[in-house]
Each structure stands twice: as C-alpha cells, then as structure tokens.
Image (cartoon, rainbow, N blue to C red; front, side):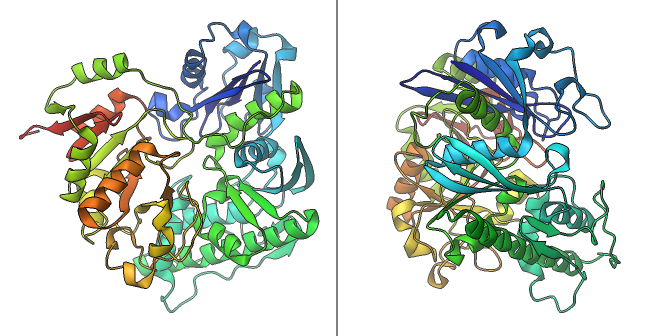
Length: 530
C-alpha cells in the first residue's frame, strides 16, 4: 500500500509524506516544501516535496498511489480550501479519481502524527495551535490501540492565538513565537506589568476572546508602546507564563476526561518546550510525548497515517516513527555536489576524529548526515556544532554564521547517559522539546548553552538514534571531559534549514563556518582566503 499525505497551499509549511508498506513493514519519507524550494515556511503547493517522496520509494506514477490525503483549513473541498489567496488547482490531484483523494480535519492529522510516532498503545492527545479546520483552536482526542477518537474541541480564541498576537505586538513576525519564548526569561525581573490579560478556562476552552481581535494578530486590550528591550522582554515573560498556565489547565482536564496516564502534545503550541517541561514536572502523567514535527510541518505525516491505518486498515507494525525520514542522498549525489564547488580541501581519513578535534579547538563545524530530520529543529543531521565551553561562543556563532538576535539561546546536545550530571532531569529528551535547568555547578562549564535563567533546551543523544552526532560528542568528551556540544540549525537567519548536499556546501561557503562534515566520512575544510 502507498499513501501520500499532503499539507498544501496556500497555508504555511506545506509539505508531503509517503508511507509504503505491507503487513510486515512500513517505510516513511517526509519533507517540507521549504527545504526544496528554499523559501522559509513555504506556502507553495508541495510539488517538489511530492516528487522527492515518490522518488525515494521508486513510485513512478500517481496512478501507483492507493490514496492521497490532505488536511483542510477553510473548506473540505481541496480546490476551494483558501480564504484570500486561491490555491492551485492545476495540480496532479485534479487528474486522480475522486475516491482516491480524501480531505481530513487539520487537528485529526496532528493527532495521528503525534500518537503513531509516540510508541504508545493508548494516550490522551492534546492539539493546541492557532487555528485549524473550521477555525478550531484546541482539541482533545483519546487513542486506544488503532482507534483515535475526538473528545472535545473548540473554536474559541485560545492560547495559541494569544501567543501569536503578543509575538506580533513585540515586533516579531508570523510564526516567530520561538523568539518570544527565548526572550521571556529576560523579562522576569522587569518591575512593571505590560498586559491585563482576562481569560476564562473551562474544559477544552482557554478563552482569550476579550484580549485578541478575531481574524487578526491584534490585541483588543490597551497596550503601551513596547519601545525598550525591557518592555518587550516583560511582554514575552507575561505571555509565556500565561501559556504555561493554559497548558497545565488543558493537561489536567485531559487527564480527568480520559483517565490516561500517557499524554501526546501536538500543534504549534507544543513547540513551547518550556511549557512542555512544566507539564512533565507536574507529575500528571507517567509519560509525555511531543512530536518533533508538532507544527504544521508534521501534517503530511498525520494525513498519510490516517489514510494508511484508518482508511486502508493497515496494521501498526512499527513502534516509534524515526525522526530522520527525509529523502536520502547517495554517494554519487554527494560527489557531484563536491565537484560543483571549490574553495575547500577534502579530508577523508579519520574525518569524524578530525571534526571532533576542530570542535575541541573551538572551531565551527557543520554536519550533513544522511536523511534530514522532521520538524523545524535541527537534531544533528542538519546541524551546526560548536564547543559549549566558552560564553563568547554564542556571540561568535551569531556574528559569523547565524546573524540572529543575541537573546536567543543555543541548544545543548548531551550523551544521554550523562543527562542527570548536567541537568535537573533524568529522562530522554531527544527532540529539544523539554527545557530543564542546568545544574548550578555546570553552568560555568557549559555557558554557551545555558540560558539567562539557567535553563537549556535539551537534546539527549544515543548511539542508536544519533550514531554520528553521538560519536562526535563522545570524541569531544575524550578531548575536553565534557559530554555536551552546542547544536543549532544548519542555516542562516531567514533561510530554511539546508536539505541537499548542494545546499549544505553553499551555506558552508557563504558563511564563516570552519568545516563541513558530510556523511561522517568526508570533511571539508576551508582554504585560506575563503
């Protein structure tokens, strides 16, 4: 069976996923259109992503697909699913029999992506975002075995829209809520209040309709001009605390409503890793899973999973879905990319060891390993790495490569068995979706990945999940005594994360990155003068 999942134009973060499987095995591939058309948060019909997924599994014709599933936002007719800017209708969907194309509720796609990626056999599933199908903002589902069932949903303005509105008021752009989360700790000690936020919590509803203007990112409430850094930081702090309270309310209510001891959190708000950690700390659940593609980047996977399991009745013959399910690049493609550029030397002997030595020598090393990771965060296969040992490395990375706001933190990636030594947490955090405190005695050891409030957006590494990144961390530990690397996404500000070897080499040469490690066995080092 082959099922293609889509999240299509004109909505942000379009992409495609393909499941190819039988009773013995299911294989997955997914990629966002932005990784291929190089337009951040792309709203284009995902034709490049579809082609890449089909090529990955040798599917030569759309006629070879058993089903195509796409979510919808405004209309469950894929040709009419838009509000202002029309969607494309001159696409392959128009050539398929009508019974081969299915439209799916946006939140249900989120729920399928989270639950079937989690490895759980039953769970409560919270979906919290801006707006989904028919203006839904928040939903609760319950999963038992292969069945996912809606418990409650609402279209009342919720925490996702409030967070987006405050992000806009601070001066950040659309889909830049992560900046607000990073800015928030700087506002804790600012001695004034910016907002008077009135809210009403009732079950699935976290009502902020008295605060937000419906249909826009404007606020109804009086808001002083946010001119200074302190003003903006305080505004971020206040909405972050509101988010944590809203998500704790929803999590408690989900527990009471379902009785489940496992929770999946998804939707754009699930990328708020600070709030996620508060839920974990609450002890409400025995386990909490947040899908690394919790944003709309994961909708294609959820759509494909719904088609594969709910529509075609295929059984679940896998546990977790791997995070690294992007298109693959073979040796021929890598060598072709190498021959297309100059300005670097190529080292193939002990490339991994040489890269680790450069990191220990405080150099900046980028990585392009195998298949790309799902979701908006680089988890090692498309990463830029640096030593966490010097506080100035954060500013060095920003000035030489990232060119982003100085208040935004960089993530620590740690060998998982050392987690409790460095962080006030002792459990896996493989996707940077939990933010524990760095232990007080370690903050001066890894200052470049310790945020202003003493926290770190943590990624834990294992040899099975992250073989090459774990190996680099191990070699770095042998050289320095510290099992932690600074990990940030392989891109520059305003661009998507690199996807192909060509993208990687172009970004490497266009920045002050010192070296690029491709595939673990090829190290590119810039020649002097480049």
